[in-house]
Length: 173
Image (cartoon, rainbow, N blue to C red; front, side, top):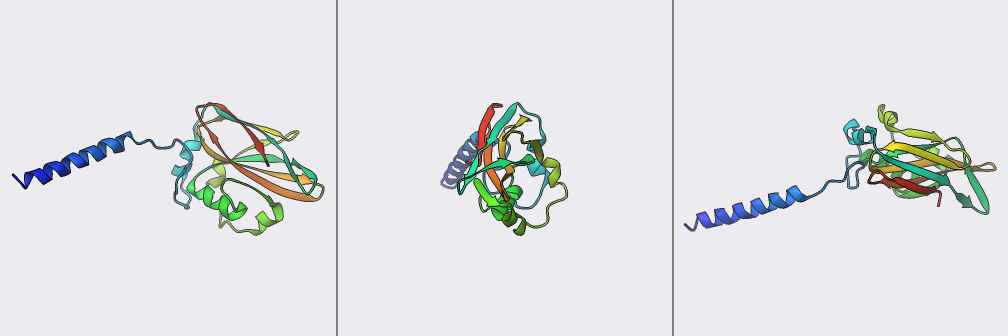
């Protein structure tokens, strides 16, 4: 009998752990924990799904008394272990940054995976405003070049879409 009791106790502990594990939630879209820094199309798959979320934003960046304005497109990149590592190397942050474009170009983030561009989205920035629609819930990086006179900076900010709602973002603040 004494041999069975520890086995029953161990079985009860394991059953409890499995039950609690089944209740744990996993974030939907966009890696929030440490993930592989190697490119994997599977890690990006969530971002290719259609969704109800949207991001409406404006660019508002000023430095040294100069107001910068967006030029070209605003990029939207899914947050994965791979892109998080790239953001850290290029911008020195995975949350938000404003870095001279020449510095970003001079930094190395390694060879870009061939399929990486298939998961990027871009929208024109007109009058310092932009909008992304049809997004799934998840974590994303917004990136935009901004200019004041001859000075060109790149601003980056991580944003989260949830519940299929619209997120309002000020890029550069």
